[in-house]
Length: 167
Image (cartoon, rainbow, N blue to C red; front, side):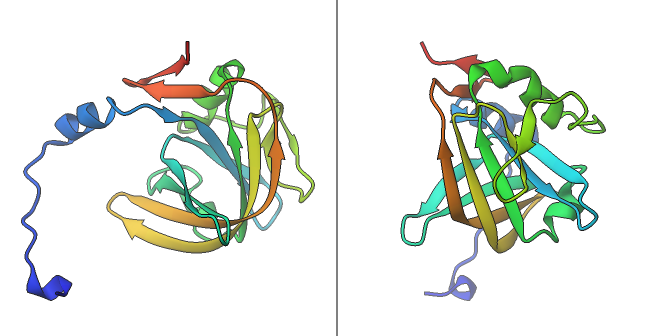
């Protein structure tokens, strides 16, 4: 059976209804960073992040096409994913704010490959871009993990449209 053999009707789900349904699914919080060709750092906060493959190790993250950094991530060849802890809440909010100077207030440092990473992150994954896939108003960015750095602590969780911690 091919896509041409089946017809999937348009969804009649209102955006606010879909958003409310998805807010009931808890997820971790990450900050994703890269550099422009001129060296300027760029980044965003995401909760749409997961592993894709063990061999080779791959992850995916979803980026809104309207994000300030979308054009940079559309062209970059590397990116870093920092898994956040509760202590990183203000940093997560800063990187989620459109128009904010995300790198002005600190909290990041260059990793071994030169990409900015969150200080004292739960983990940091350096990635080489493997693929990009358009998906509605987002782009799915798939990266091959080239290096991992592990930290300690508990994760920050995004649930019901707010940052939370695990009990």
